[in-house]
Image 1 (cartoon, rainbow, N blue to C red):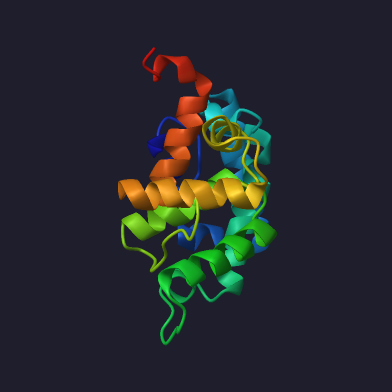
Image 2 (cartoon, helix red, strand yellow):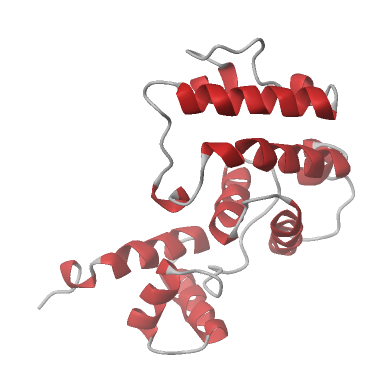
Length: 192
């Protein structure tokens, strides 16, 4: 993170700050291209985690730029994540933001958007809370849910996951992650 945002160990002319990337589109893209190139040449090279296995440093400028444009179009982070006078409850606002982000931010798929919004809610930067486990578009969690609940349709799988989470009094993000991890090696967790 220090390398990415602070330029630590990179040959950058300036650090990556919100003010810097908002000066002009051309300056932003030049800075992001410079960052992308510097990261690609750095040693050790940055690695993406398991969930980001298909990402590339080359996509960084477009991903960052689409996020910056999206936030600016919404009036800034505070206007988007802490709007004044909203009548939506936390779960309804989660749904609204989930749809907006998926539609407008490059490379923000189901998992990225889900976990990003959950994180914002947990650290109280946004008044959001997931309304479900978002199994329908998932791969690992859907496989796990099918192992656990049977070969049901997406809506039923999510309904069962919600029911189990509510019964166990755990959050929907935690249930989604637990089902995903469990499906990788279910025999390790089942007593014979």
